[in-house]
Image (cartoon, rainbow, N blue to C red):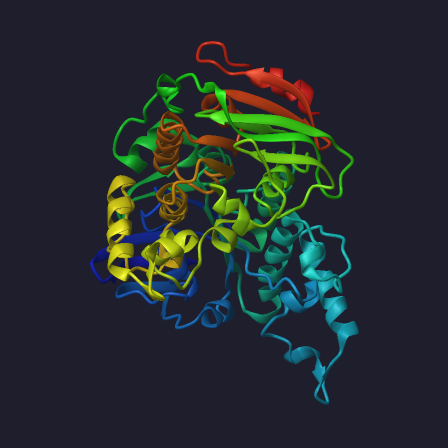
Length: 501
């Protein structure tokens, strides 16, 4: 029902897509995998009409089409559920579902909110989400917003002939196991209404949900694999063009930290909005992982350390000096860097180029007489592009157009180049492919060797165990158990889980 034939796309200095062929059958779920920078995002944007291809054909039911805008694609039954979510947070759920398609609800120049609410409830029932359509979207959880995104796409059914093609871009990246199972059961039920293209870096999920899997590398399809014949190791090798290093978390590079050099201390800190009492110390070269279930209080601890929240009780000390003023700018001046979970919203400044993003937290170092030393900024950026192997045509490229892995490297370079001694990592590998994750793990080891103290909220328990010197198990906002994680004597998953739940 949908086909790409020999699709090409070039940007200045970069050949992004090289003769891509892809077919989707009626009710089929296609998995799409590849390293960050392999061309997945560009391919999805071409299918959705957000980017124009340079050559090749797009066919719907065998008929060539040309989507000049996402609206063109939607009118042909193609919808997209974005990884970073596209809902407008200060609008209601129903306004988001019918954004741009309000005409059926307008009479005499006014919107009939009751009719829109009833229509929105119909769409929400398709995804089994029982909420008030008049709810402001910002009040929803991430998983609820994800389902609203899906309901918004399914609303196309009433506006188009035939079935839908729904693009799922990393829909599970920050969902819990139960939420993922709910989403997958919905997708399987919806096969009678739609076909799906599912993009994920979690290969076990790709194999579980998909019928066929397309593997992209350097802008070309290198293989198409039936899911019932697919193996994770085989897909990984095709994605990166080599065997994955079995020393995945670089445990062989884990060296003892300096127990006499305390960089950060929390002394009986109560995080805003919680009845808790958190005490911890972070040492030079130490990787301290905070583990716990979603909502356990890990993220608020990070945001308190970075000055985005003020503790109600207790003290925070950096290098033995008590922090009196809490703000992000104060934390940066004290040598603290923060890599947030929401990379595109809080980590980078889209619309600004790579060198501007890298120097954003240290502008005073590049200002002379009120004028920016742009040449020095560019030189720094080129150095870090080389050191971190950032895939980019030049330091002038808009950071918002980079792949997720390369954006994460830019954020890391921002703090590392600024000399931050304390780095807070909140899900640093979320949405990254296997190769990009290895790069991040290598950078974590480099920072540790250089004496940087790291507090990590990991994407998985395995990641926390593999990377850390020390683990603190968080439950209901409090540290319930400490573990030492020396190589060869690391705790098991069960050791952690029994204290988490």
